[in-house]
Amino acid sequence: MSADTLAPAAPRYRWIILGIATFAQTASGFFVQGIGALGVQLQRDLDLSAAQLGLLLSAAQLAPLVGLVVAGELLDRFDERWVVGTGACVVAVALGAGSAAPGYVSLLLVLLIVGAGNSTAQPGGSKAVASWFEANRRGFAMGIRQAGLPLGGALAAASLPAVAGAFGWRATLVTGGLVALLGGVVFMRWYRPPPAGTAAGPTGTGGSIGSWLAARFGMLREPAMVRITLSGTSLISVQCGVLVLTVLHLHDTTSLSAGSAALVLVVAQAAGVVGRICLAAWSDRGTSGRQTSLTVCMAAVLVGMAALMTPLGQSPLTAVLLFVWLGFFGYGWYGPWVAQVAESAPPGRTGFAIGLAMSVNQIAIVVMPPTLGLLTDLTHGFDAAWGLLASMTAASLLVTARMGRVPRSP
Image (cartoon, rainbow, N blue to C red):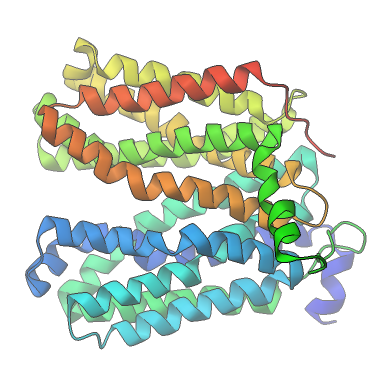
């Protein structure tokens, strides 16, 4: 019996969906997640400054500002497997072509295209998981899926530098392209829609452009989406802070070696993997909606960042523990957050709602790393950066706490 016949009738198939959605996301973003680990080779072989290396990271994140919204709309109109699969093929082709890039500027253009193709995997996989899992398991499933991204980053960091050392940096693009292509093929081959009656149908194009824009972007005025975007942008900013500042803070403030500080960052990210699963599973058990777990995360990271600005942040042991704490809560919030977005979406617009919310987060992903770095450079310390993140989190916590509860759909 073929997979097409078997899938809709098999409740266990949801776990296959979860597996292929996680793999597709990990594979699509594999190369981008590993750029940081290739820094030494890229700087040496392309004669890059630190600023130019950072721009490579930003280039891969610019296109999703629009691409996530476009992908969300496509997901509401077409089968997820073709949207996600096509995006993965774009990533694969771009990286394959990029392996012949003559220089730095060409590589920047390649990464812009890679970012556009990668825009489909995140909302596409999230919508697929949301469609297949009921509310009392959706958070746990989302947590597992979202844990795939930091795991993919760890795999890329472990493998791509070795590939570059043996075959050169161009070979890493070919490797990343092949991995992305594999993820797309797996998703297109084995993804199937959920049983009839559980998936939202595609939306039409009726009405003028103005009415279309009002219907879609009007979501941002809804109380549920306001809470979602506030909590999301504040927590993704904290995540950026942990990624950018952990090693620098530990090295400059507590005198840990660069290698030891980098190891702490790995441990913090590992804590985030655990957090994404545990916090998402906990959100399934609550009766007050996903926002409760997000409120706990905001309060927890606020405490952690405030502590970093005290003498506790200057002690090697306590600073390490604080960064692990920030890793657990500062990364772990994403599973329940995506589940909340899916459950708050209007009927038939789940894909667009997920893409829109992620696109708002993407603004912080692009803006916050250079902002935090600039604050650190100008003040010759880290208190200003942690203070900015703490202020943003506190403001979001206060506003969301005063708004009504976001209900969880069945």
